Length: 253
Ligand code: MN3
Image 1 (cartoon, rainbow, N blue to C red):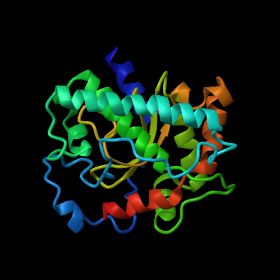
Image 2: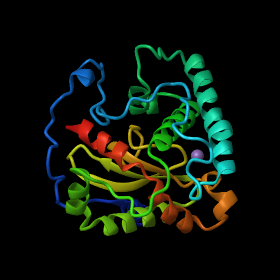
Image 3: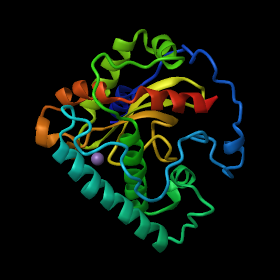
Image 4: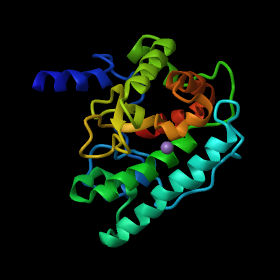
């Protein structure tokens, strides 16, 4: 049993081997980040996500044909809105001081809180992060600047990276997320998390600062793709906002 468990875990955490992320990962602390009080070492550079749902940067039909307008509308205005509302209820009930504690810090200590806070805090963070990770569809969409060489160094090629990430997303059983993260050893990693967990959480097997996340819950794709999760993932590459992913990469150092 133990062996099976280990193997399963290894299946969904694909490391980048010994290849370190090439350039520019020195631990320069940005002035804005230095002011953040945290005892969380992992995810210290993670993107700030407010506790409340933010407006989308595009219309519900803005990601068509990859993501249809009805899916986008239900996903944002029903599913994600519910996570935000339930998070607000949970932080009130559990007396979290949201002025003193960022959502990122809260997630880094999530083992100290309820399942409701874990599910909805993760659900809210993940969706806000996901919306910002996308833009209008463009064929041949690729990362640029320093991120492309880092991906090529870590995974062999951009296509090899996409293949591995797609496989991780396809093979996540049930509901969850696929991620590209930078871990504490400054390596690029691909992995997945169940339900609404994420790599910032202290309870997560996959830990690191997320650069890119993909929602593989059925609600994210079922209306258009039904059971064809691989088709959804393959199409999704056309709407990844690599400029935002590059900014996240830059923020690490
Ligand atoms: Mn979702």
